[in-house]
Length: 343
Image (cartoon, rainbow, N blue to C red; front, side):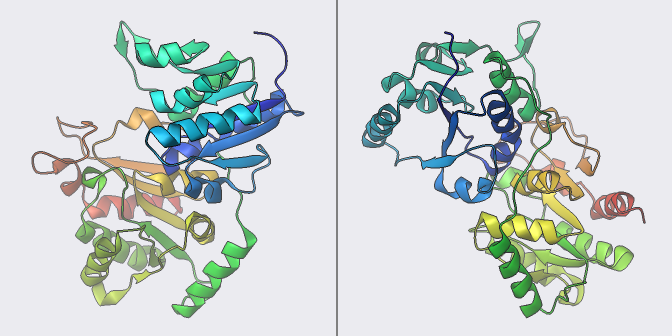
């Protein structure tokens, strides 16, 4: 299948962190085909996250789920007359729309017979000795663009910070009594993946207190939708109510808040990768997930894990006592923060 594409559709991963880790692919496609129109497709919220990058031209919001949504998506893709569909998620649904739309070249991983049928350019998932092996997500995605003869243009993650979001965040911080010159610790205590990724709120509170005492950073809690109770528990457990809460009004404000930070303390979730993209140091508490999947750009990260026999399990809910997270002491986060900031 030869010929340079004039229109490229890129299906963006669903999770915030994965979407950020896909930015090197957008850059590789843009460098290889500077005259092509590159269109990203995915959840509407992710447009706000990725807006402002020069590596794509516009965004297509994914229609609703169900049979009608699948057909509506296929019709729209067909009208757009894409030459390529670069499918970063592994799901059959991600590949079905471009297949029904008869996009000439459809590239991605073929995890099962159905997915294989839907693709023209098929990559096998990484294996060693017949067994699947974990690969950092950025590298995993870049293997797709390489298969399309698009050389890497670096593996660094990137995001653009919206000027309006930056101003709103600074104004909201002033309203909370945070001076413009005050150094802050941004704390993201939730996780969309499931309860197994959550460090106990009391541990977060103790770490915030310790980092404030040792490094002088003011803790700003940034819970996501539905995570207000977690933030409230951290505030209740924090000595003297030192931690204040700022609920970001969307992903653009979360990006701006991370940019404003001196340090980020987070579960193994999207804000971790936002911090990497913006060059901010991050202390990451990790329990059930495989560290090899995100083992990139670790220079300004400290990934804290408790070595227990059942981790990584990749389960959304712990069936026993959540020992991988409850045993991970807050003092380790304080020490990691001090190391990152050179204290």
